[in-house]
Image (cartoon, rainbow, N blue to C red; front, side, top):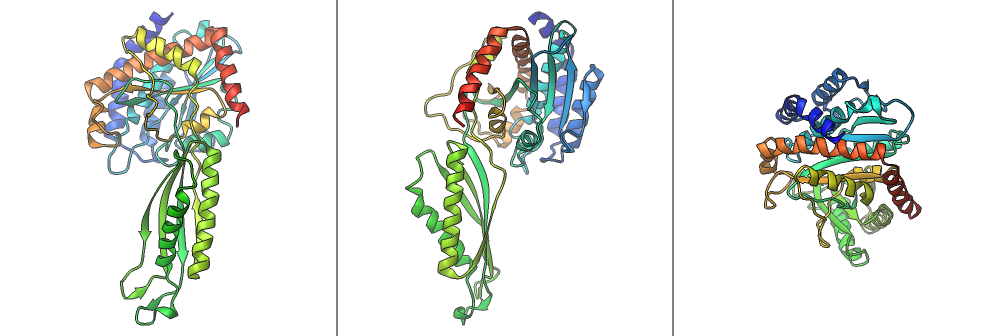
Length: 388
């Protein structure tokens, strides 16, 4: 059966690589990915998938479904396709989308003989827009038994976790005055500076895994005018969503203290919270075995692995999920860079599209047909859910 999957992906290789290169050559920012969605859904519809678009009232989200011969396990393959501002596909989301579509086409050949359901869920705006968070909140994963996706990287690894993260904007509103009479004004920039100072004071009370970085986005118009408005934006990360929300509470206290000492009013805007990621080990091991069958040796993250953040973490809290990595560039190449963007449309990038499609399709097949694997995946997920 897995040889059938390989053959089906190979038969569609030209279309999948065209999809990858078309998305790469036409970068679209989060929630604006209209071309990418149209190309994916057109290819899936031609191969017998039922398309829901828009999905969950999100214009650039979609769901493509192919049912088997009866009610059974439901597997979702996740596609990302948004680009980075100024960099294009420097994170390789064109590969993620094409591999997910390819995996669906690979296993579709078998669905008339399998019990269950396979779907591709198109998830927009991973880069800061939290598309998966919105989909989770709107019930997109309520009837999904596992979610499978991959991400291009500089290493072949499974089981990499992720930090919880959130963007916070701090705004302060004061009163303008000429600098010859500063006592007549309320300096909003001073409040922002106090906010940064307060963060440094509390930093020592946060866990070592906590991270916060910020920039001043508004600080006045002229040096001889007391700024009536100032603002800063921060990226806050923590090991868990619970710890992250505790840090946000601390930021609210710091803002209140800056208001008290300067007289400026404050407004804190907290964006969607990206949860920490729980990569399902049982499902990841199945993917690892399939990729090694395809000639890709897979490893595990090092103990001191640098962790980022992604909205797949929110998915991993509501259904078993994997987000595994396949190398398309040397380890010296940074993600979100021009060099990584080039790698995402390179011969190796194309090879990963096809291999990842096969590996994910085979892993979906394992889940649909292996009751012991499904039990192990579910048991592990229940243990994680019990800690939340």
